[in-house]
Length: 163
Ligand code: FES
Image 1 (cartoon, rainbow, N blue to C red):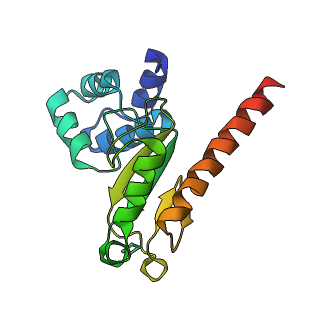
Image 2 (cartoon, protein in one colour; image 1 turned 45 degrees about the horizontal axis):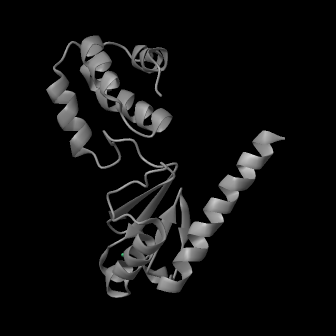
Image 3 (spheres, helix red, strand yellow; image 1 turned 90 degrees about the horizontal axis):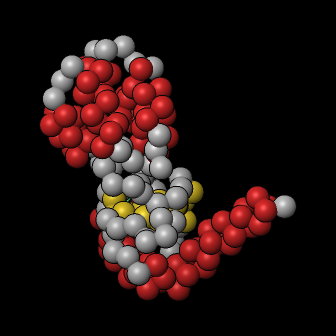
């Protein structure tokens, strides 16, 4: 749950000028994995602008999200090279593993899947980016192992936290 204090701290770290709207929203995205509604309202008040204006910015920029995203963000490249080499199969594999389609987040809040444009690694297509790490030349059968790796890392992290 995002606290009012956290939101206020981000908003007030910027001068009350509209040109800082995007930067403040990017900070919220980074801190909370999405932009909470109270973040939009607080920022609008600070910048003396309409919430609708910020809302349209937040929906325009793909890097910003108004819905909470998962802990792990899986980006499937659907640029031309990856598409030709079967990026749709990767989406199918993730649907099987996680039960979600691109654009969705698992109910436990652990994974979000997105289809994106060229990730700049076409020679290694098809490519998937998970939390900033590239997984290259993937086949459908590689998908479960990748998801499992992140699940295991989370489980180990949880156990370490319980020590
Ligand atoms: S098309 Fe996928 S990395 Fe370029």
